Length: 323
Image 1 (cartoon, rainbow, N blue to C red):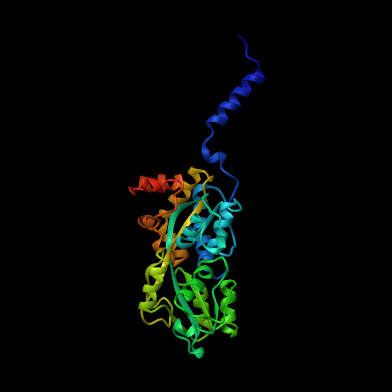
Image 2: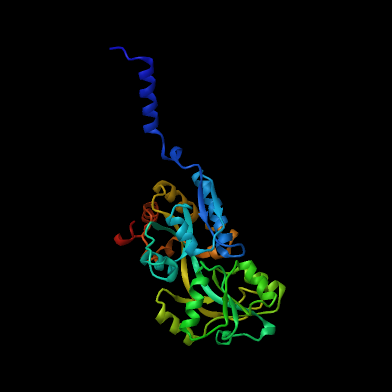
């Protein structure tokens, strides 16, 4: 039987498509949600986006956002492919708890790799005389973007501690620093990896005081918010910080929508986990971006591509966290 030239070509093309490697079918680009200028997410996100893009041969653009809450919303609705969040906010999202969720459960997000601990701390101008959380009563406190981790948690923390401030102000990290210097707010409370760029900026321009919670306040917060864990801001993190500062923190994880290719996610995780020196060069918070910190996630399902990577490296992922 003779086969026509057109049919033969069609069969050949179909065979080529079937045999085409996954990389050739990859999307033209991916988008990563970060945070506002002056925040650690903004800097850290640029670093791992570049490292991962080099490895998977797919451009990863970054999108400025309001932080963790906003990243979850954007990832859930596929307005971005990748994001970053603190696990306390992710827990609220998964369960549909917290006012910002409006009762909606965000369950299309998946964890992909551990980032670093986010630590809560405070900065005031020295001339204000404010050197403790209790002294924030009746003051104007800036907490960064409304959809960020501090924007979500700091008001709840102050309420839990019985500290009634005059007003909570929202805005980008750099904007908060400017407002502090101009006297528009009395304190800038934030939670971020260390060192926090906006705090370093404030210290470079003004005489400032850094402080955090007392031992008793930490105990109260951990009782009311079990997702919080003990943390320490080491002396020397900022030039004028001369003593270790105990506080509380929540760990951060990178996330992806569940529909992102498992091969792409595997490549992203592998690139980030195996290029820690480059990550640290980009931001020192990445010292905690290590495979062993995969255990810091106890509830959010991991993306199949991430599960594949970590299990190849000998880290057992619990069955209930395989998403």
